[in-house]
Image (cartoon, rainbow, N blue to C red; front, side):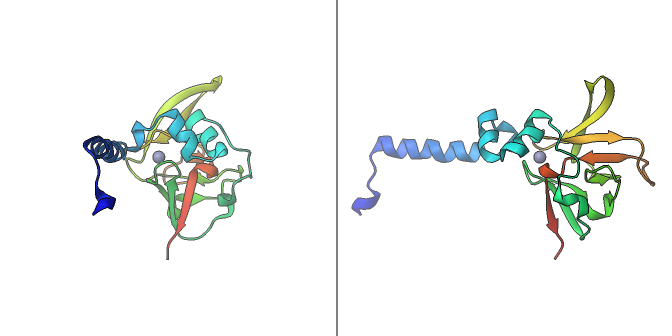
Length: 154
Ligand SMILES: [Zn+2]
């Protein structure tokens, strides 16, 4: 069939494209440019530039349904609705996270050291953890709602 007749050069090119796209399936190999294309500007600002959304700006503040909260960068599961509580801070708050989904580092952005956390899968910034949370952990994971994707349980 004429339609599928490719010369050797075209064929090699297609092979390279296919293997490149398979290889880049790993999210953490994405470049800054890739992230800019994938995310909306406000998501990019928080996730990749460690920005903070305005308080009370997230619709997830009032989300009370049962379900899971995923990283907007890579879809990995970070929180469940059971871990969420109303902190009154204006940011979606959780007292715990799904084991292995987050990594931590200390940041000095506001002089006082804060514990920053990010997605262990794609490295995207999510928020800060404070020690004024409820039992059983006593911790408050103060998360930017814009970088969470809520999937309600059906
Ligand atoms: Zn992620």
